[in-house]
Structure formats: C-alpha cells, structure tokens
Image (cartoon, rainbow, N blue to C red; front, side):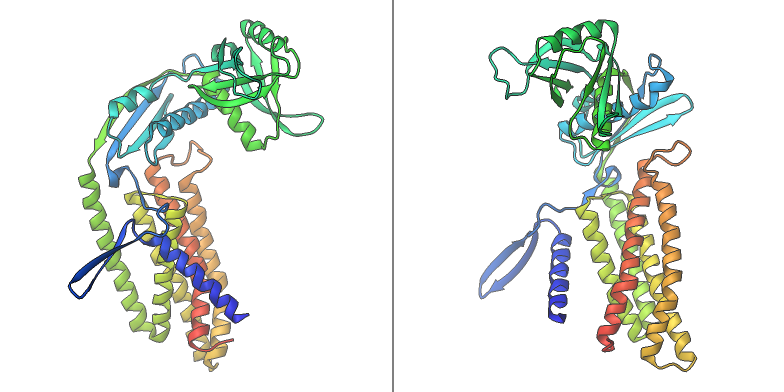
Amino acid sequence: MKLIKTTIILLVAALIIAIDLPENYHINFQIGKKKISYTINPLNNFRTHLGLDLQGGSNLVFEADTSKIKPADLQDALNSLRDTIERRVNFFGVSEPVVQTIKSGNTYRISVDLPGIKDINQAIGLIGQTAELSFTEEASATSSAQIPTKLTGLTGRNIQKASMTFDQQTGKPEVALSFTANGTKLFGDLTSRNVGKPIGIFVDNYPISVATVQQPITDGNAVITGNFTVDAANQLAIAINSGALAMPIKLVEQRNIGPTLGAFEVQKSVFAGAVGLLMVLLFMIVYYGRLGIIASMALVIYGLISFAIFRVIPVVLTLPGVAGFILSIGMAVDANILIFERIKEEMRRGRDFEVAIKIGFGRAIDAIKDANITTLIVAFILFNPLNWEFLPQFGMVRGFALTLAIGVATSLFTGVVITKRLINFFYKQK
C-alpha cells in the first residue's frame, strides 16, 4: 500500500514539474568537443498567460446605446452584448481577452482588454459592429442532414425576446421565443414550409442553434427544446437576445500599452517575490530549526502546485495577480507557524515530541481553516462572479482576487496535508 501511495505521489510530482517547466526549456551540455542542446517541452499546451499590463496591447472602452432598450430587458441586453463581443474577439484570434461590463451612473460601457493585439483598427471595426441575428433554412440543393444555409429574411428585428423556461410536463429547460407582428407572419410561413426540416439560427454568421420544425407555428410564440441544462438554455437565450435586443456601441476610449513597461514591472515583481520568499525561508529555518526546513520544503511545493494551477486553468497573470500570489505566500507560512507554535506549546507542557505533533496539529487545524476561509470569502467578494453592481467589477481587482484565492486554497492543502506528511516522513511517524 505504501508503495502505491509513493508511486502516485511521484507521478503527481512529475506532472506538476512538467507543467511548471517554461516553454521550450533548453538543456545545454557538452560531450567531448561536441555541444548538445536538448529542448524539454513535455506539456507544451500549458504556458503562462500574461495580462494586458505585462504583455502589452490595447484597452478599448465602448459605450452602449441603451435608449431603445426597455428597462426590464436591459440586463439581458448587456449580457448578450458582452457575450457577442467575447465571441467576436475570440474569432479575431486575440489571446486571453478580458471583456467586462462597467456601469457609471446611467451609462453602460464595455471594457475590452486585448493583450498582444497588433491590428487594433481591424479589432475596433469588428467589435463595434451591432450583432446581427438571422434564421436560415435548407437551400434546395442540400440534404436534410446538412446545416441550413439559405437566408429567410427573418432577423433579430422580428424577435421581441428569448428567455429560458421549463417544460410544464417534463420540467426540462427550454428556450421560449416571442415574435413581433411581422415576425409572427414570417416565422409562420417559415415553419409551415419546413415541417420535419431543420432551421438554423445564426449570430454574426456563427451558428448558435439548429432545430427541427415539428409543426407549423403561427401564433408568434415558439419553443426550442432539447437536452438542455439550465446553463445551456440560458446561454442560448442570451445568444439569441444578442441579436434580438441589439444595441449600437461606440468607441469612447482607447489606450495602447507597450510591453516594455510590462516586462520591467515583471522583473521588479519577480525580484520582490524572490527576496520575500528567501527571507521567509531563512526566518523559518533559523527560528524553527528542523521544523523550519520542513516548512520551507512545503512552501516550495506550495509554489510549484500554485503555479501549475495557474497554467492549467489558465489564469491570466497581471501585476495585481502577481501581488495576490505573493500575498498568499504569507498565508502559506502562517499555517505552518500556527502548527509549529501549537507543537511547541505541547512540548512545554511536558509531552514528548510524537504526542506534541499529533495534538499540535489537531489544535491548529481549526484556526487555520477559519483564517483561510475568511480570506477566501474576501477573495470571493473582490472577484464578484455574479457581477453585483455594488461590488468591484474591474479585471485588475478580479485578477488579484483569483490568484489570492488559488494561493490560499493551495496553502490550506500544503499546510494541513503536505507539512504533516513531511513531518511524519522525517520523524518516522505513523
């Protein structure tokens, strides 16, 4: 059993190190007079993603014209607009864009970060277009097995709204469509001539749904059914609304950020983090002796695991994100200090070392959990995943919160699990 556990641990460690290796990592060595260079890149799909402030690029801010949108439909329209812009930016080929909605008074804006973008004018033209929704049917020369390709004249202007609902009989999620008066006639004609055939729905020439017509629909209310999850049905409704509740947008701000500034700040941040980490390691070793060496090993393991998680997710690293990671190092050390102080307290009471370790860990765990859970709650509030207007909605703040949360969660694991395993290993504990 121990052999199996050891093998698993070694495999996981090898995987983490492989993920952490820099892209195109080179090993140079010499045999006699012959110089050999070997490139190690076992997992080349994982790389470090740098944000706008570190890689350089452009930040664009668009203002949405909400004058023709009903107040009840405003939030759906904004979500649809954001998703449409994300889809356009991804189609443009921008790596790791950040698209977010910002409200200032009664003004609604969309901020778009484009790291590494070169042709900024083309990006502005592509993003600034109003979303276009269209319905298509089979061309006469195609078979029923192919995606419809013929435009029908039915567009987003003919749809009042799309929404996620539930089937009253089965309880399954579905998407309900309501059409305008003219849209009702067009959709009725379309479904009447395509019973048993597929109808496609496209936004910006991108297919978002292909549904087979079951019967003619002439009352202006249609339902798209399928094996939808709640999230999938919501996403489809939002995608349709991006064309049905279309809002014009205009560019109101553009900032170009050069990569030289980012590279300089990265060097300073890495240096500051390295100095801080070295000082922490020295303090732990000097103050706690052998336990400090174990804590230092756990801290190095913590760093490798956290960085691997950043690459796997992947996390887009910004300067605030780097700061959040450096801050989480202190949280990782804090867990070890709590454990070691509890062990020392038990030893001062006359308990032997083995018993002190067991009791000390037990007493420290509750305090460690409480401290880390509190920090995770703060990180959740800063990240604001639900986009509450009374909380921060800025990418830099969210980058800080995300790396802090990952670091704290990882430190909780290393402090409670890794440190204990290392102590057991070095002190022959069972």
